[in-house]
Amino acid sequence: MKDTVVVGRVGRPHGLDGSFVVEDASEAPERFAAGAELLAAGEPAKVVASKRAGQGRLVVKLDRRVERGAALEVPRDALPEPAAGEWYVFQLVGLSVEEDGGRVLGKVADVEPWPANDVLVLDGGAMLPLVDACVLQVDLDAGRIVVAQGFAGPG
Image (cartoon, rainbow, N blue to C red; front, top):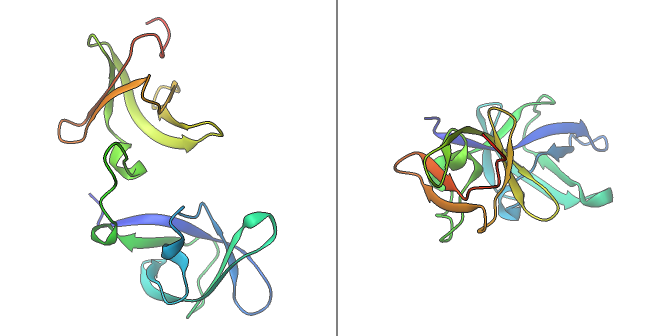
C-alpha cells in the first residue's frame, strides 16, 4: 500500500507568478492553506499562497516550480481519522462488493461525487449510491462492502 494519498493535481497556470489551478482538489481546505506542506511530483513543497478564483476553483502557489499534471500528495499518516460512518476514497477502492445474500458484484474501482450523494463505481461498470439504504456494511478489515438487494439490478 502506498504511503501517500493524492489530494490534487497541478492544473493550468493562473497568472504569471507560478500559481496554478488545483485539479481534483481535496475537500479539506487545510491541505492547501498557506504554509501547508505536501509532496509535489514526489518532492516536498510548501504552499506559499492559496485563494479561490472564478467558479470557486482553488488556486495555489508553491515555493517551487512544479510541472502541470504532477500529483499533489500528503502522507497517509497525516490524515485525520474519518468520523464514524465515513471513509476516505482510497480506503474503499479495491474492496469487494456483494449483495446481502452473498452475490458478488465486483470491486470498487472509484468513488465519484454526484449532486445528491457519492457513488461507488464497480470494476464492471455498475454504479451504486453511497447511501445508508444501499450500503449496509463497510468492513475495511475484511475488505468488503455489503449492499442491499435491488440496487445492482438482476444478476
